[in-house]
Image (cartoon, rainbow, N blue to C red; front, side, top):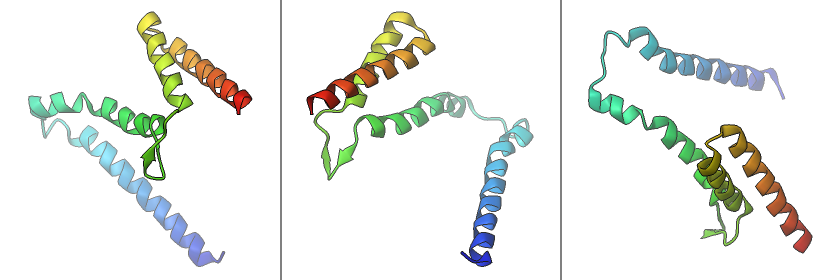
Length: 113
């Protein structure tokens, strides 16, 4: 690759970094001057949950070839993790329980196939 490609890549990284910093820091710098209404604040409370769901749901229920996957070990492991949280209310047990469930389910399916 030539230096033109390297310059383009470096420029893209720098510009994306600047855009990210500006969009994330603008509210911190000018937030007191532009107060949010209560309805906007209420809506923003759901932003982290919505972002997490947007990341997790496609991993649990992927579409392959335009049709839904019939059996997915990730979905079963997620169900085990949810049950673990419901029972213990511990983040560490959710992570460990979900991963152990995934490894067991994946291992059993690997032995069957």
